[in-house]
Image 1 (tube, helix red, strand yellow):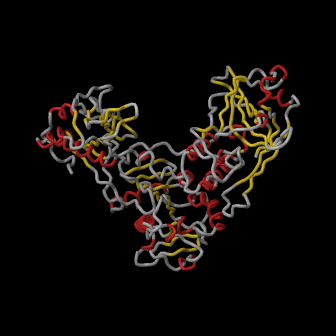
Image 2 (cartoon, helix red, strand yellow):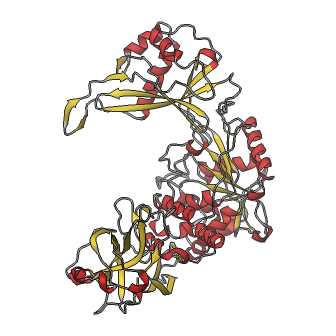
Image 3 (cartoon, one colour):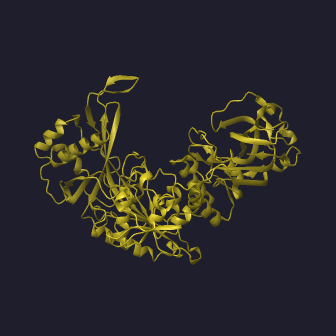
Length: 623
């Protein structure tokens, strides 16, 4: 490995020209805006002979780039025999062209270079980190240690925790003292036995583990089915738990706890009786409180399964440049992007409330340690004197909608967990905003809540888990329109009654049934052409209907429209009505409906009060 301290006197002509454009390296920029970087070079996969020849002649930068490209191709293979698409008949001949401009960008103070490789019909992007070890104004002060739990790293973590104790916004109020049902006791020495203890002392300090179960092979000796707590081994585990039977991620979390002097850990695999539906149901309802009151959440961010572990880092490649610059691969991204955007940890459904409710999170990323609390983020790579990112916000219904939207994009090992996985987050918002929560929606904004929209194609779960009017009833990402800066929508319904209960057929309490009873104006779509806005009726012109999932009907009269609210279009010069498309479930006129989708239409001059007072409104039930 070549480091920044090494001298690279020999550089080929195009590398010399290329990196001349990086000088001087200032705290504001890398390359002048729109600067062209002449690097007209091509090569051939998979051996890249031109770069190899230049490296053999003494160019350390070419040697570095060749090794980076080869490594990147090994991680993300390119099929040399495949055509790009049915329309592209020519196969790639392996020729690579380097883009004539090497782009640079700055994210959260971290300087990066972007290398673009043209592969015939497509391109490959490789990101590299650029460090300046002599620039005093740089926010980058060090590379991450190759050993995440070395003495230096432990000292950094302890410093973060010490600083956080002085943050008033990171403290749990005395009235919120809580203790989980069970905790894993972690003795100081690994020669002493681990065991489960009943947490009968409120306010006991403990850490919680946030990790991915992943997909495991049942025959693996540390498979969850073999290492989980069950009704059969619960009593024995109160005395001792052999550490060698536990999956690697859990063993490494125990190691972290020992190094930080933490005596108690909460880990779902061990602290919930996994084959006891009643225990799972009661503990899942406490999940939000468990993370909300943990003194620290240990996040195995880089791990894709409990068998993988998280205390190892990939070997990096780096090369020295003029003026003590260091070019590094893989790129080191800022704390908010320290793992790939599609990493398994961030796509976990349960992570939404674990991350939002935890007062402190210690992330073990692929390339560095980073730390989150209510006051901001810190990283091994960030200068302690640098500006802290803005604090996390947890105060408005727009934050709430954003959290639910993010959650809807995640995945769950068990789809029936959809509502339990955000129960803690929902409770926190209900307390903060003072609004009652019902199956994914809040009463204070029920009209807007009902008008959730599918981002992409939605699907129905095999087993219904929520009322049809809840976004939790479907699989797929959803969103809500934001009305910030526009007149508030005017409601066209009045909620008279509601009820949500746990389905008695589900012993784990994950399936919910319920209804809403609004005083509203259901309109059969078959009669849409007869509506007269001049008589105070709703005008549905240019109806735009978006179904939640694919549906078909034998009886046309079964489809109804339910206006929910009127809202301004743009800055308010025009108005439209938005509502639900429903299927009638009983006789004529129907009183029971289920949601099929949503619609929007132009709205003439009819006012909401006139509509509700027109005598057409009646009480219906949405199921």
